[in-house]
Image (cartoon, rainbow, N blue to C red; front, side):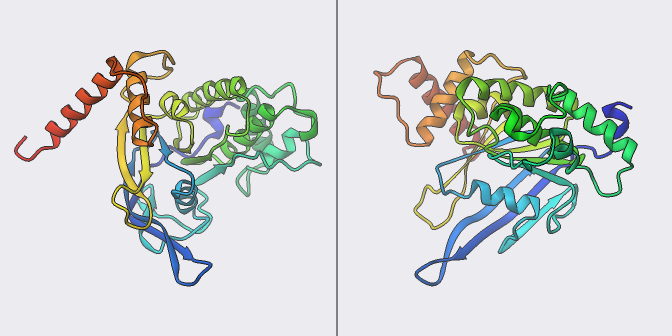
Length: 289
């Protein structure tokens, strides 16, 4: 039995319309975290959420997964409202959260949908472990494997649910730089084999540029409480991407500038390219064009 035989859920689109979320404030009243979030994610697309710490990236991920409820607006997956702990989505966190007393195989089995036949489940887990390159470690326990291997097991467990939407909350944030690059490439291989919709939270601009079709920048420009969508950038490059690509370097500099990290060098081709790109965007959106 192959992945094509066992996979039943197609990639699903996500719609976020007018969504807001607030929480009780320690001093009384409420604290607005998100406001007026409008975003349509196409089926099979990879979208990265980028922004400063505390801007609500993980909160938005929880809302899409059904682990939390919005105070305003609507969220839907595949055209129907998001349900509490929605079974159409799966979440992988920054920490692998593997059960230490279970083998890698048994940890991945936890992700299987309820009611999966034993033989089908075994075939599905074995195929996923091959896909994430852990078929040599099936009988090991979490303490016997590296952090990168544990994160691969976490990814396989999330995929075992056959999700229409895969939600990744800084899944590689705790890994060393080289392992992180390897995991990014592995995620793209997994997406090619299992083209689910992916919503990825990251603080890493380079990671967003390497993985995402679009990058959504969250934050607040006008001082209004709560974060909203400041900018949506199309990467416009086929995957896999050359990390040294000049166009990606221009996007990287622009994203860092939007995040408040300015270029301190004298004006160079990157600065000039960013200014030209912004001028073209402003011209394209001006009234009468």
